[in-house]
Image (cartoon, rainbow, N blue to C red; front, side):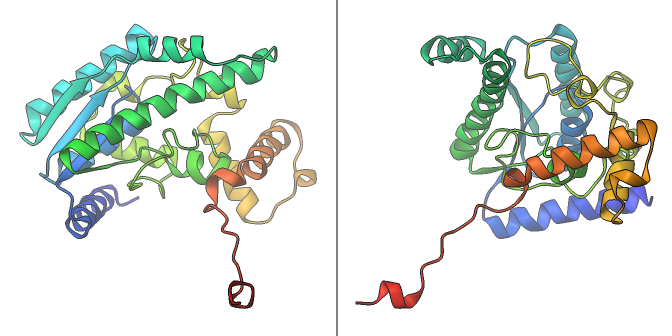
Length: 264
């Protein structure tokens, strides 16, 4: 992996896109995880204004501290970086009390978790609108195009996707090269949407390294019956999520109307 060349390519891509978009800078949410740490650093390297927004909602203290430390590190190294902390806990609590909840605990919990992500998306676009900035996405290839592990119109609601063609392991390589703090590099990946420390692996049932393997096998045309044991289990986890979440990964379908029907 030609890490430095990839970094330069992404920074140039971000710069070129910002110029043609007629916007003035970037905004993104900082979670304390590797993806937002890498994307924010890449945006900072463009030397255009970058607004980092921390948006806790019943967040674990270790996630908050990692996010704050990363933002301070960015600000100490890049003059173009500014930050805001917007505590959305009360907003979320009011929303939770306002909606009619179901008796299905699993779906109710998942819907509320996704609502946290959508509140954050709304917040980012509020500040994007004020400052004429574009919202930078933090999804990687496995999450966005492999298993669909993101919230539709939440963390998936962005203007650009700088690391969407990079696997999780590749994001870590870039993070190491950029000097991202070891607390972030060593942190267990979590979406932080449930108000606890449950990891992505807890939710998915597989590690990102396992999912990268499964994605490669799936794209090469392998079938579940060709594997046994843990490999078979991981392959089936990947395939099930990949197929179930196609509605997230594909563009919104448009009902096309023929010119014959439109004419009198």
